[in-house]
Length: 160
Image (cartoon, rainbow, N blue to C red):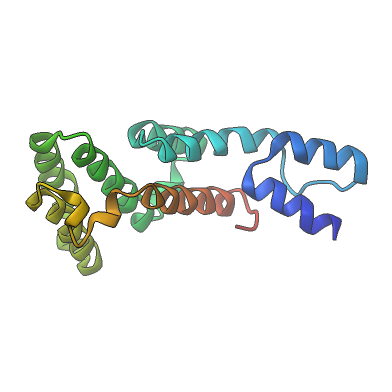
């Protein structure tokens, strides 16, 4: 039971709680607790909409994560496009979609479909009535942050 609790604390990024639990229960975590802070910084950057910073932090942790996981990289780039749209940077969003995401969509049909859904946000003045308006919800950021967190955990040979 203690290992299960420790696994939860490590996976979800509760460093202080994991340290205290380690002292009280004597349960050793599977990974260095110092790595949690870096992983949580990436997760927080995505959750706050700062995707460029998150990509930089992931590459600082382990450049192979994004190189070996094209779906994760696409989802981060898609989130970056969503943030541009959310901030009303329409010209920049269109340019970004054409230069960065369209080539990936040509390589992968599912990426193309996701890109089309995301770009369709631009067709609506009032996104609250948009059929794909959920892309602008905070839950979309959380979904992307969770995907990044799982990829980092996997790269550190830890359960996700």
